[in-house]
Image (cartoon, rainbow, N blue to C red; front, side, top):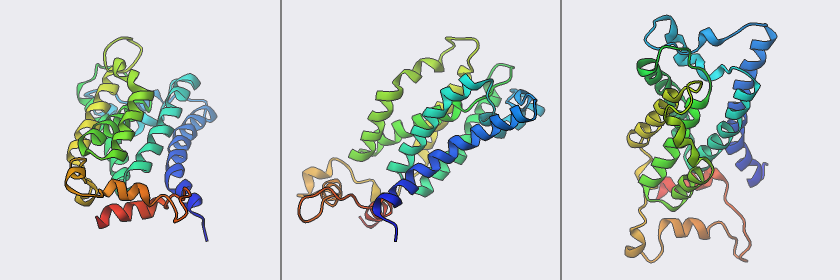
Amino acid sequence: MKSDIQNRVEYTLIPAVLSVLVIWLAFWLEKRLVTDFTPYGIYPRSIDGAIGILTSPLIHSGISHLWSNTVPVAVLTWLLFTFYPARVCYRVLFLGWFLSGLFTWMVARQAYHIGASGMVYTLASFIFFKGIGMYKYRHIVASLIVVFFYGSLVWYVLPVDPGISWEGHLCGAIAGLLMSVFIKIPKSAQHSIKSVVENPLSHDERWFLMQFDKNGNFSPLPVEELHKLDEEE
């Protein structure tokens, strides 16, 4: 039988590792075939360039470009799966991938737009805005983590460098914001901070206390149990 720690690692880290593995595998394949995948990126308002809506996050111009996206993709995917139910996470990943690419294809300047940075902005934007909007302690913590580590990302939604697809960044951020509005978390998980005034022991306080055993030792619940608690509330 798997331990709580094993369950937690599998639930949160495996999606993050797989996300990174996919973009590295695409880069390895490009080098293995001795070719250039750039023409498979997004070329705005071109029928042929529309294929990039699906493929552009997998394509990188070089190892430095790839590495600059690797860590934030891993960290933000991990944050997403740590603080939100799996069904929400997968919707954010797949819908965000499509919307950020589609918006870029619709409005960006006519050049090839490649790289996973659009998804980085999508994830950062969703986690930040959804956490602030839900008024839940745990999700606000996720928002603050995004601000602390990736607050500087905001500068790159502006045309500060002609070699950077700032339009892709901006479109990713917009996609994340829209999803934070329209993707609903179960109502049972939307317990407001204001309820502390009305209830002697709020949902979040009970959640916190359940992380300790009867002797007061820290013994975190499996992630699956935490989400069940949200749904039962």
